[in-house]
Image: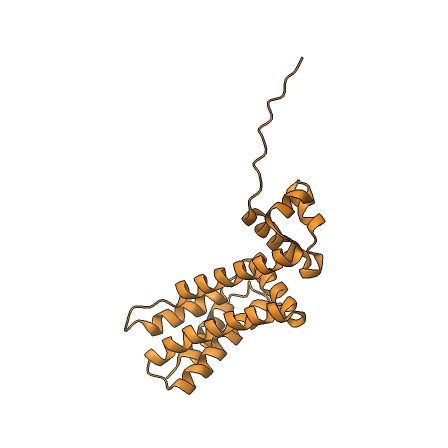
Length: 191
């Protein structure tokens, strides 16, 4: 008689559900985010979900909090600069955010922004993250010697560029793309 020694399945933690929800969000958007879908994806029953979340709305709030915290951590990391090196850090921000990006991350960003078009809570979170993005780069521009108004304008231009180009369908293999990116970055940072 064969005896199977299956490894016991580890119970899902709250973060496992949130991570699985991000996968669904990237694939299907907020409308595809269903408890049954997540449970099936995780290979567990819905009861496990309700152990960690009161309901779908509780999960949605956790997703938004996790997304916001992750974005703010990333923004803080990307905009941290030693005094006197703000221009180099702005160049790095442009390089990092305009590089070939994690497609899943882009799809999550798009899904959260689409969600924010229809949900006030999601809209508040997106506005908070965008305000943080703009403020962090505004400070870098001010420390480079730009007036506050000019710094605000350049911060908006910087993010309009990096987000806009990440959404565009163009030939990323074109050897001139790196030259174009340098040219655009130069225009954003030029005195």
